[in-house]
Length: 519
Image 1 (cartoon, rainbow, N blue to C red):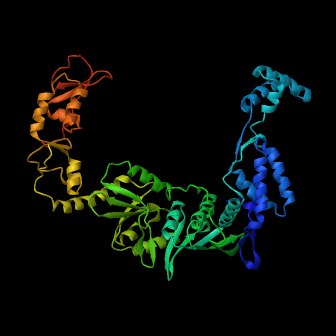
Image 2 (cartoon, rainbow, N blue to C red):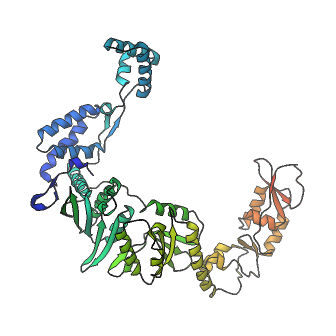
Image 3 (cartoon, helix red, strand yellow):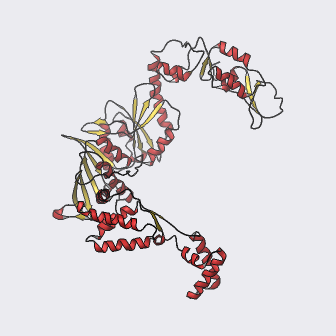
């Protein structure tokens, strides 16, 4: 976007039309780019003077200044100084206080004294004193990613984005509505996706629909245009609050395009509540995969894209999850109507307790959790466990009465994967040909061989090598099942000891693994 003071629009006929640029402005764009290239190595103050001269020659100073702003964002400036300016200033001010500066001669004496302390000449002190001020920064790189044509494209896009900053509602039709909805949700804007006779229309409510306009919200609203302009065959109609007067702005692919440059990074989540929940949930070891923004759900004449979906890893089952935060009463009413039209899916809704609509959502046959501040992950997991219990029970119907794999050693996770179920569905066995050691099934003959190969006093690393040879990676549980523990001394390798045997080293720590078997 551009600054609001650089906005150029026409209000002819009561409309609201950004003053886009044509190819006739290509020489001007080339001059702006050339001005920056010609001033590499110069101070910003010198560059600014050159740009102001270009403005004076042009018939539209706002256009020149807007193009310059876009180029400057791509350039690199740096402070050029022999000694860090803050250090120079501190030393110079201390010297000035000692000298008592009252005139130019006193100032030079203070500069000389500071130079002596810093071990440089007075000219260096004078040059470095304010070298870090913006006007004194040096342009060191003007190798920008724009040529005259793409600079004009970027200007048109930025101009339209600035105009959208004051939008109160935007209506978009596109051949790719799901991509737009994803962008709207990431940008934390309020929206509806309506079905029309010829497709779908995305209606986005702007910042004026909230309690007060905020710059954060307005900026996010304007940034949506980049995603819109990146799709094919789109048309946008916006209602603009033009200093108290309501006007309509219409844009299409013929007006705005996205130049071939990297897009601005957009936030990943609609809100901090969702980001916090996703971060904590993904840190858990569950048989559920959290999916961000799954496929749309039909809701009567509209569609809804839930915030999340929980997909069960061992069956074709999905629980959709919507986080309903604090918005305007009008938005809440629309959301309730939307939830009422969602059918034939399992939907869990976490609703901000301050809204007081939990019972209304439950009346629409959806699971409801209330929260204050943040969604409690444990409550969500408890709901997933309920579904998981039913899914495990359903899967158990097709399982054998006992498990007798051909392997000498096999993990419960591998056994469960072979049957397409979770570990909890197979962990209780029975296992007539194996012993369960921790989360591993081991034939008794293998355990007997290990009893012969592992002995008290052996280093833990050697014992682990013997276990690895049989495909056993749970050393703690297996050693415990064989009657051993691990004694540790300092930071060295552990030593295998018989359980209950005294440690001859006279000290150190020991561990007694839990074999996890049902004995």
